[in-house]
Image (cartoon, rainbow, N blue to C red; front, side, top):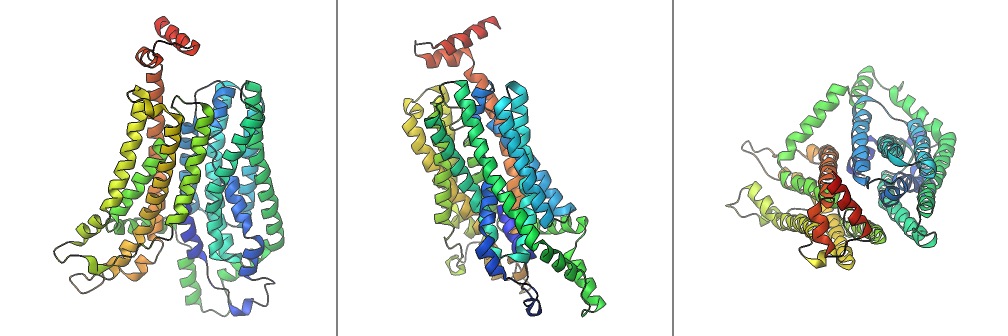
Length: 491
C-alpha cells in the first residue's frame, strides 16, 4: 500500500549484477526466475490487499456500527511500526518472507472463524486486530521480498506486488458483489454466509501464495544463503575492501536514522509536490470509502458498488498517468522568477485541481447530511461523483509522487554562488526521495485515518440527533427513526 514507493527503491538499491564467474554455479538466471515465478509476487500482493468493503456486512452480522475507519487506523499504525522495525532494527531474509506469508494465512483464517461464530463488540475488536496484524505482516513481506528479488529476480518484478494490491481489492469487491446477488442479503444468516465466503476466498488465494513461496524457498533458498555468505567476505578481497563493503552494507540504527534525516533536508526543494502528496492521501483516506459512501443514507449495495468503482477508477487513472513526462525544462523559467516561484507556478493547476477535489468532497458530504440539496442523496450522482474522485486521486497522487525526483533533477542543472550544482547527481538519483515520500505518506495516512474516524463518530452522533431525524423524515418516519427518537426522549 503506502510503502510501495520505498519498497521499489529498496529492491533497486539492494540489487547488484551477478558476477560472471557465478553464472556457471547457479542453474538459473534472474530473467528466467522472473518469467517462471515472477507472478508469485502478484499473488502475494493480492493476498495482502486490504478489503474494507466487508465492513458493510460485519456491521449487520455483528450488530454494531460500521468500523472500516477503525480497521484502517489499526492497519496503518501496525504497518508504520513494523516498517520502522524492518527498516532500522532488523535484517530480513527469505525465511522471513515465508513465515510472514504463513502468518498472513493464519490471520485471514481468523477473520473467517470470527465471521462464522462472532457477534457483538468482541467480534468487532478481533476483526480490527486482524487488520492490524495484516498491516504488520505486509511490511515484513514487502521488505523481505525486496531482498529476495535483489538476489533471484529482475528488479522490475517488485512492482508486481503493488499491482496486486488494487487487483486484489477489485477481485474481492467483485466477489462480494456477486455473492450478495447469488446468496442474498435479506437475513443475518445470508450476510454471515457472504462474509465467510468473501474472507474464505482471501484465505484460498493466500494459501496458494504460501505454498508457492514455500516451494520456492525449498528449491532456491540455499542460493540466497550462499550468496549472503559470499557477501560477508571473499578470499580474493583485501581487508580494506572487506571492511569498506561491510560498512556500506550494514549500517547501524543511528546511521540509518541520520541517513533518513539527511534525506529530509532536500525535501525543501520539492515541498510543492510533497504538499500535493499529503493532500492527495487526505482526499483518498479521509473521505473514501469510510465517509463517502459508507456513512451516507443510500442502499448498501450502492455503497459496495461505489467503493468498488473508486478502486477501479483509481487503478485505471494511475496506469494512464504513470507515463506522464515530469521532466522540467529550465528554459521555461522567466529570468525575473526565483526557482521556488517558477516551480510553484508550474504546479498551480495541480494545486487548484486538488483544492477543487477536496472542496467538492466536503460539499457532497455536508450536503448529504444536511439534506440541503436533494441531488447529493441520489445514488446515481454519488456513483458518478465517486468515479470522478477516483480518477482525480489516481492522477494527482501519481503526478505528485513522480514529480518529486524531477524537481531534484532540475536543481542538479542549477548552480549555486560557488558554481557548484545546488543538488548533486547522487542525491537526485539516490533513494532519498522515496524514503521521504514513503515516511511522509505512512505518517500522514495514520493521522488522516484517525481524523476520519473522529469525524465519522461526530457524524453518527449528529445523525442520531432529533434535529437530523426530523429534518430528514419529511413527515414520514420509519420504524428505525421512531426507535431512535424514542431513545432520544428517554435519555
